[in-house]
Length: 98
Image (cartoon, rainbow, N blue to C red; front, side):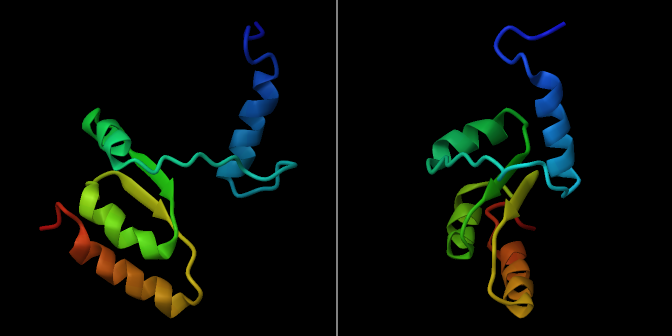
């Protein structure tokens, strides 16, 4: 049964699967920017996980405002040592660590 507002659902669903499996699906991935921490806090308060993509320099600020539980942060770094350092810092900076 086709969906009223998404008639190409099967194609979209397949694109999502390919994206999840890190495979090419014919275009770039969509991005949504939600800069307001209060909106993200509401999502967490509802018991939902978050997957956010932010610059490395915003990770500390995000962790100071959001729970690390169920939070997946995707961020680019220049080098692997920078990434490892960021991971170490993240565990210490979370508002709910310990």
